[in-house]
Length: 386
Figure 1 (cartoon, rainbow, N blue to C red):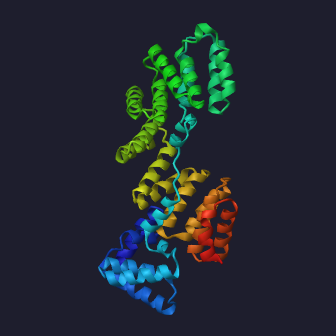
Figure 2 (figure 1 turned 120 degrees about the vertical axis):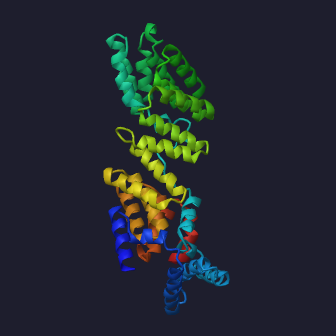
Figure 3 (figure 1 turned 45 degrees about the vertical axis):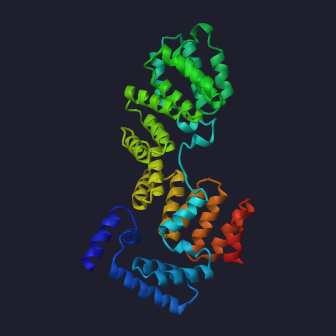
């Protein structure tokens, strides 16, 4: 037994995970259940109001097919504390976050028709095009200015640069494509698609225009047309990670989760890597209940990109699901300290503190989130803090 624990611990530490997390994943053994029941029974005898121990003993009884005892413990725990079900297991805590729309995904443009930049403008690919353009220098300067203004959200300035291009050079594929991008930003999706059609007609090898037309079609709800365009883009340039990322998001939208995972992985392991793909892949693993794999991916992201607040947001949720409440609170704290103002995360940090036994910090955070307008947390505050 000692040898087994040492071996497992070595594997765990090598992957950057806490021993308790992997033991949780592999604890479905009869002898462990019996020892667990005895342990929690002693805690309950010492404190009959210990709803957490009641819930955890209930879970063990369920695993031992002792349904009557499991139901009795669960009913008593919920009478003591209606929120004690969060102690019961990973799925309960996962569902708690899901009910509050707790998810972070990069490029979430389905809720914003004017969100092209959230779909990732292929800026690097545009830059390489300017050397190939058979344009006068002043036209290329204006195109470069327009691209720069689009990338920083200065759309009126970009429009002005394009308007200054002489009429004789407005059939240029790059000009037509950038006009299409501006139409996406203004929500004129049909006009955008018309511009991309003309760009592709002008230059059938213009990969960027296929990608951008796919984005416009996706935002318009033309998912099959979007899929065809992403495939055309990838057939021309399978090396561009951002196109694989965009295709993965389309497959998610279509409900093809396994296909989306494959494309996220392809983007992750491209030549230069793509951290946004790894983040979304981690969130998909989390949603599927593959918590350990999700945590491993997020740990790698935080090691490589410690300044990105979103990574701590997702890992905080994973730690909460595992019942590692203090680590969850630390990650939510880091997320907030990196400049992300989010009253929901104040609530999650407060709940993590409460679940970890720090009532003072927990109640303070939850009260603050209520002051920021999240009145749906008032019932929990009244029960657990007053």
